[in-house]
Length: 80
Image (cartoon, rainbow, N blue to C red):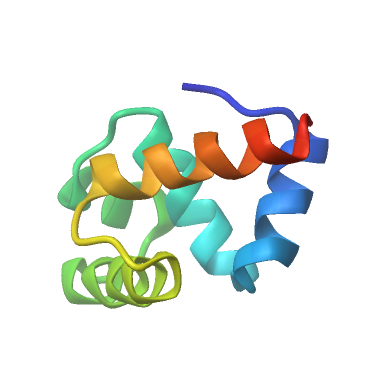
């Protein structure tokens, strides 16, 4: 799933995402698993998990699917 730059900017502000969390979120939306995300961003697997955990906490969800759904809901409410 691909969001537009303006949508990512809105999500970043709305959910107080760090630039690295946005990078991880984009790759999650592209369907990559944690290991693939780590390799792509050249970060450790546990670092990917930490970023995901932070995003899950901020969005009040427990999974990658949950975060994607929350992103979609947020954008629909904002009509962006």
